[in-house]
Length: 492
Image 1 (cartoon, rainbow, N blue to C red):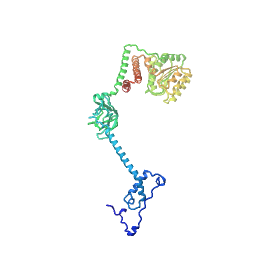
Image 2: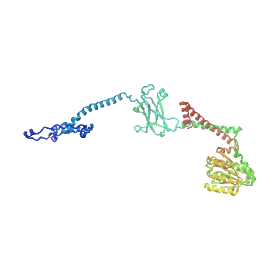
Image 3: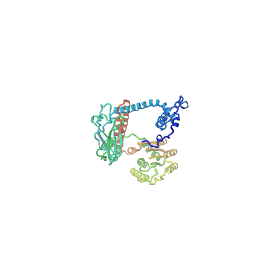
Image 4: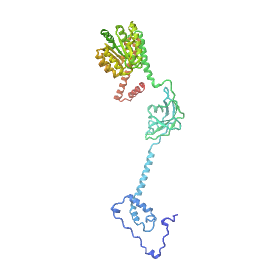
């Protein structure tokens, strides 16, 4: 029912018939000028807007109004009617076409692939408890001869709770020939927390990215640490080979098998340097680096000190040794005492010739260089770990005319020793000095076994380089897989 408050339902005034008869009929609206208002062609938006106003206005002649109050609107509606008659079918046709296109596209799209029938998860064997194996059969829609292909890959998801939030883990799984032959896929999920339960889901993913419903493991899987980590199998093999070579060479050396070690000029010159100091009546100066006994280079320096002290005892030369660490002083005293005893001259040993100066690096360097300038030793030995003071020692001893023999494993200091000293032990020559000087079968066998280990390491590097080069030149995926296995498995 129309409300009485509506303007169209208001009671009209009852004009006298005479007055009503004299009321003029509404004059027809003046036609709009060509081009609309102001000579401009009205736009469709203006037509639609004004048409809506005319239709919704209760006083409009094209709406439900009365009289001639909407004469101009009626004229505008008459002008807009042809546009509405044309636009309405066009809009309807566009809607029908778009809807039909969507329906056809939906009908032509392949169906969502079905998920795998089951999923199982178990602890990965021979690991540290951080890996879990997930196994599932292929989707019934995943066939190698399917056209179009319904399954592009499989996605594995992991969660710590059955109803928890699942996250994707690992790379997308694309079945290979072996998977299609066996009908199952097994993947290893890494970076799991040892002892924590995990649930897994697997989804088949279509080429357009649509995913199937999830197939979930019925029971959680827990990673357990094994007594042997299979990832380190090749490391164990290489370590056993190296240790076996060392043990075999030591046993051969004990049985009299000759082990040849190349000549090291710096060690052969020890007798020359000590003999020169004896002839000149000057002392020998020995510095075992600036580090403590926890540094392997210091221990190697003490080994060379034993040989120098023995030669000095035989030649009756004075050996002086300042140290920058108290433990090094104690060890050096015992070493020199043993060397003098081995030479048959224990009474010539003077304990005060081996003394502690300071732990401060350049304070020790200042003392040692001052001592060199004052006493002018004839032979200086630098065996140990050195830093910035290396060139200070070498240049100072060079100014006093001393013969110098240096040895260190610090790559940054070797150039200074090579440039300023008469002889230098480079790198592993310094560590091999003990076996070279003593001639002990055990040490010589160990040295030879380590050399065999180096040969094995270099061989692996050469083989890997050749495999990579061949894989690139020949574009062979098999060679590339072999290179990856060598790098990521054997040398991991």
